[in-house]
Amino acid sequence: MRRTSGFAAVLTLVATSLVGCGGSDDKAAGGGAPLRIGYQRFGGLSLVKARHDAPGVTWSLFESGPALTEAIKAGAIDVGQTGEAPPIFAAAARTPFRIAAVGAPSPKSEAVLVKRSRGFRSFADLKGKTIALNKGSNVHWLLVRLLQANRMTLSDVNVKYLKPAEGRPAFDNDQVDAWIIWDPYFALAERDDVQILADATGVADNREYILVAQEAADKKTEQIKSFLATYERTTAWGIANPDERAEVLSPELKIDEATTKRALARAAQPVAPLTGEIGAELQGIADGFTELELIPGKVQVDKLVDTRFTGAAQ
Image 1 (cartoon, one colour):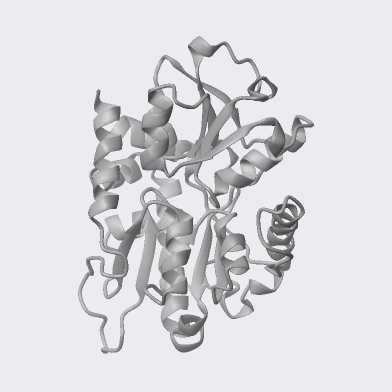
Image 2 (cartoon, rainbow, N blue to C red):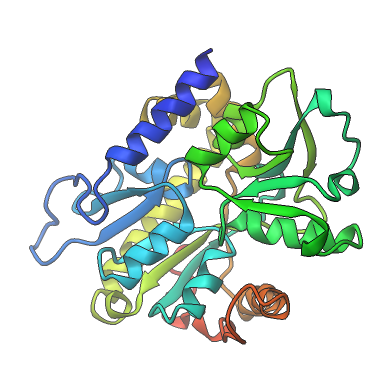
């Protein structure tokens, strides 16, 4: 019961947040327009917010990466955090943004969930079945890679695109056969009758990306560098202090501490070097989506790694 209540609380918080108009800490010293930060519950930026480590910024909550990149496109936020697929779909939609920081791989923090009673033994058993996921999110790429690994194609499964708020009840009520989801929704859905059929280990890196609107990258360069340095310090503190991290984030997430700690053990990763290899990795994912005609034509995402911010979060 506590986990279900926690999930409902997360969704309530998402639904009541104001995109581009989130609460802010104190005004930035020295004046000037504050950075507008878009974050997702449980991502690396949520710890910065929970600890009040970045006074002078405003915060806007988003349920998923695709919604966040839409806000970047609309000019509602300057900085945002997503998984690996949203930047590609954003680039395909001609959203003006740059990649300013990246996290280390976190493959165990996204997974394919099924009911134990269904008797599925492997992902291959989902052939002909209905799989729910959020379109354009990190789990979309996980589906593609798992299909490839099992010599299957998109035509072998029935994909139902559902946001997390829709996916959980569909999964609970057996309206879908499997649900591909990320933490903390993943952790909140774990029960005795739920089986982890597969995670991203060996098939997808599942990194966290920090995206910056092009205009902000040009006009707020130093503010963004300062914020990224804070993000790195806070992330490092969380890695070094897992118990304290869960204690800080649990009330922010409105999720019980034990569930928060379990999900963080999978999901929280240190900042990784922002190199050309990151761009090449993301380009490979983009080319995969293009080949499957999930995005309209080829997009060039490897050039979006912004060297102005290389090392800013390290």
